[in-house]
Length: 144
Image 1 (cartoon, rainbow, N blue to C red):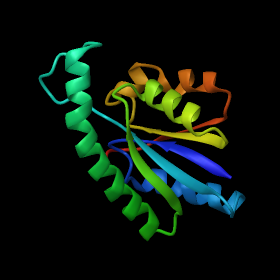
Image 2: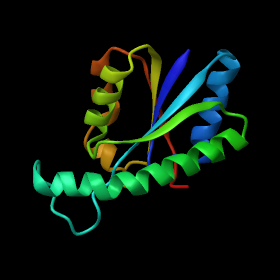
Image 3: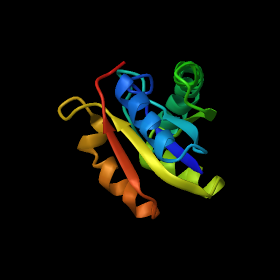
Image 4: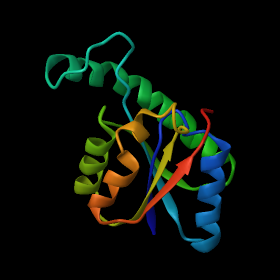
């Protein structure tokens, strides 16, 4: 079974690693794909056109590197990560694009910062992700 792990600042957190280990205990054949949505660089105004595309290009390089580093950190703990990849600035759009391009995931594991720190929680990503018809496992973790 494949699980889609969506994380950014918490991708290397012990809380996320522990949850993935729990999934592995229940499903020893589990494999994980790590999706790291891009972050708009500080000071940039978010809009749907030119700035968003520019942010995506700049952030994509950074997120690709961060995704690979997180993949290595998880693998060092015995967690099988098939692939790590950057995604759209919008975590929901990143999810939608990945699920459309690669159907067949068992569940979504969404890792966020705690309330008050998490932009994703303010955007209600954890409950809106349920619209994709897969179980959503929400992990709250401090930044790694």
